[in-house]
Length: 385
Ligand SMILES: Cc1ncc(COP(=O)(O)O)c(C=O)c1O
Image 1 (cartoon, rainbow, N blue to C red):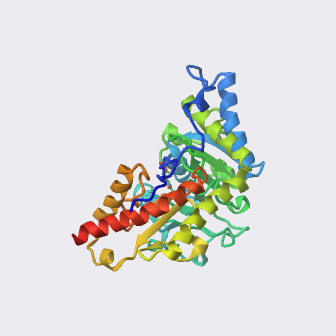
Image 2: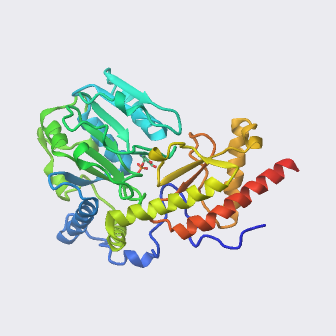
């Protein structure tokens, strides 16, 4: 039987993620369109994004924060290309995005003194094996496996290397230990439901010091350059963006930040995401055909919740056939207008991925769950027919 109730918002994609509750195009009516981002009111808008982000996140005063091109990827690449090479590098990879940074450092930067510390899907590498004399690159939350770093206890306070953290699917939903980090990056289209294309790059004083004392051996395109004539390019971190941002996307980012303030800031955002995970946890506990991809609750993400089908019929299928069945679940729920984009990432083991970031309403997650049971019963029945 089809459930009666549908989620009010069927957007469960892991990026771009659901807009904040109540969002309409009206939210953009104050956008500074057709004006220069370098004019006084344009700069004020950019500063508003930076200042509100810093305040909500409790970022230390001596950190720099900039809006940069090319989304989270742009921010991470700027950091990798500008900072790495001064020391050996430890890179943590347990899913698609960490692997992507590993490929970059190995094949593009061609760093010889590189260790990639890997873990299979559902786990994270042994954090005790990280060497803090080296620079360390890691995602805080592995979006495609749903495994996250549990805390900053493993990061040495007196480290010699830099802690370079891709936090795009963690920031605003999880606490980040700023004192233990040196570079933090994110985009707007994840936890706050903003628009894609722009990245945020946050640098600790130690990261700035590296920029001022180390020059990479490779050429840097303008879009990656964080120094000018050997000096730290402070202006980029004072709203003088490298190139032109979308003032429409900027307005939307401000809207998301104001919404976040209205629901209690970081604590409110975190509570919403954790409540969403709790709703799924209760359902998984009573549901036979499914489990979390991440067995250990300490490293289980509250934003990108990844699930694996454990039904014996499904497990007996070849991987391609499993993927095809997952696609059928996704298509059934899409056709019902119940859930969009919930198949796991194409490079992850076949399964479901349900975005549970802070813009997603717990009532919508709860409304979705009986539909998952329905869709699974449907594909099971079709396979038996
Ligand atoms: C952990 C992580 N890193 C990087 C990216 C790439 O982000 P963007 O598309 O904003 O460049 C994503 C996107 O989902 C991600 O989840």
